[in-house]
Amino acid sequence: MAVNQGEDTVQLIKDVVDIAEIIGEHVSLKRAGTNLKGLCPFHSEKTPSFTVNPERKTYHCFGCGEGGDVFSFMMNFHRLSFVEALKELARKYQIPLPEKPLNPQELEKAQKREALQSANEKAAELFHQLLLSDPTAQKAREYLGKRGIPEEITTEFRLGFAPDSWNFLVNTLPKQNITIEAAKEAGLIVPREKSGFYDRFRNRVMFPIVGLTGRVVAFGGRILDDGQPKYMNSPESPVFDKSRTLFGLYQNREYIRQAKNCLVVEGNFDLLSLAVHGVRNVVAPLGTALTQAHVRSLKGYTDEVILLFDGDQAGLKAAMRSVPLFLSEQVTARISV
Ligand SMILES: [Zn+2]
Image (cartoon, rainbow, N blue to C red):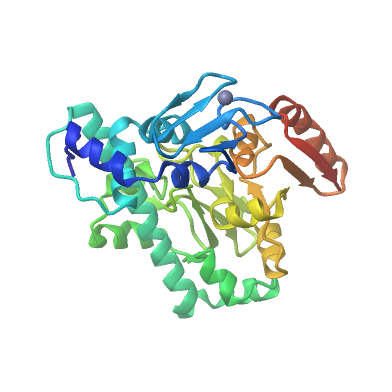
């Protein structure tokens, strides 16, 4: 959809949107007079110098000088273009956008992101339905049972099953209005050497990775037989940057804020097992070492992070390596092995 980004629409969205609510999803804000205050999500600090003025609908950081309105926050924090920020806010507040042509590059970029997210959403839905009720998913259900994952968790995290087939998505997605091009760009299917495509994820339990806007941006998959690799993630795409994304952050963000600390575990199953036991202030990086961007995205919720790594030499090494990241972001890190 092309959107009208004329002054009137922009003003309407500004009027309707609660900037404290939008920023408050990512930064713990406390009231300070007429303003709200919190730790700046754009630079490292220990004492809050980031303020939000709900009446003027602006934010400003006295530490690094970042500031602006709800659009600049969306653009800078989520790395969106202006049009994407506009669309995201309009979607959230159910404001219809009258149509108007965009410039061709903006249009192409916005449409591409939209197409990739739709492809991932549709794949997540298909995988989830198979896991819940398809006879071929019996071994996946048994596997989850063995790992102690009950149905509530399966449903909440929308776990799925990718069947042992080279062309399940290749055949199914086009019938559901998802183009082969979008499925390929999202990394769901892979071009064959000569012609045609095959499914990337086969015979795997699937973990949808949800971005902070609540939509599926990628998948992790755990193989169900002796095949390799044991764990596989979607490749990076215009909607998936591995070094900025944490499994479970979307589902667990309110728990992290309430607990005022966050456990970082190594694997998706570690996170789900803790969820089964009611421990929800947890995230898992996607098979990579923690990055500065990971620490920064956690900082919006808490300034204390506890690293839970395997007690072996490699686990300890990985934990030690990430310590400087926390120091530079002024986030307290504790290591528990
Ligand atoms: Zn700042």
